[in-house]
Image (tube, rainbow, N blue to C red):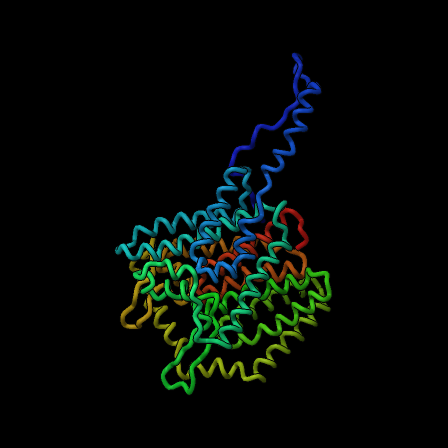
Length: 451
């Protein structure tokens, strides 16, 4: 159930005049004419402009190419917050109150920071969490200006960017884009590997584990890491299936189907096991919803499609290739050791955590990485992890009343996130996809937008 409330007090509304006996009387004609002139302005003031959120989504390729992906999202979030404040009458779904509490706790966790350099890592995570919450709140309140289809179009732009740059990673793995921001960034900052990857973004991760017969080329752009690419693909593919079901043009449907087929090339090249797990969860969830709704034709088509994909993955050698990488890079065993170290360290600071990841010398990897669950637990303690988990439970429960196939696919995004956040880390783009897909389901249920 989605609960909503109003943050700002309602403005003065017109009331009927009363005579001396207390009964209502008709206002004078002059007042009625004045109201007629005022009403259009009041309506315009209540309409949130679409451009800040659409600029974030449709402008994503340009922001990446300019090197602004760590700056523009915060600026746009500030603009959205400004519009929400001056318009007032902000409706907040119950799950976003939990997200607000989560943001507050992240601030409390800053008390655990011990070095001045840790402020940068903590600040980046806090800004991402806060900004994603603002985007969700803005979309939830912008029904008159941002329809579901406009939102899906913006998310489709992210997906197209992902696929195009994924092919770039396959074809030109050593290429780095020199963004305009790289020319003005101080040289000291450019020495930081993460900052360098944002200012001079690579198209792929080229991994050469010892003993491997050849390097593994794993597309990563527009993100620094191939796992981030895989997570974005996991979250955006169900969104694209929702788009497919809502398109009326047969030609657009054919074009999208071709694009989805072509997208498998960079997706397979990333060798992301978690990506296939996440997509499998989404597909299984939608299949379950169709079964419960007694849509037998959809169930039959879904089972056939899943079976065909599984056969294709084995027949093409994709599964063998992904599993073969484990012979030279024991990422599973390395993660297990890191998770044990992270758990033991969190037990020493279980309430507020450590604010930011910290290096584990015996493993050579920072604790609080390799999965958002472990990031939340280590950086913000068990309280921070519990608040995020509560938000996810509220989000899944609130959006479960969608009734259409496109709604099922959108709702599968937060459902899949409940599992993949164990082994995938969420950056601003992935958090934004999660939040907007969730709010699309909730707003549709509230306003009857056809999901």
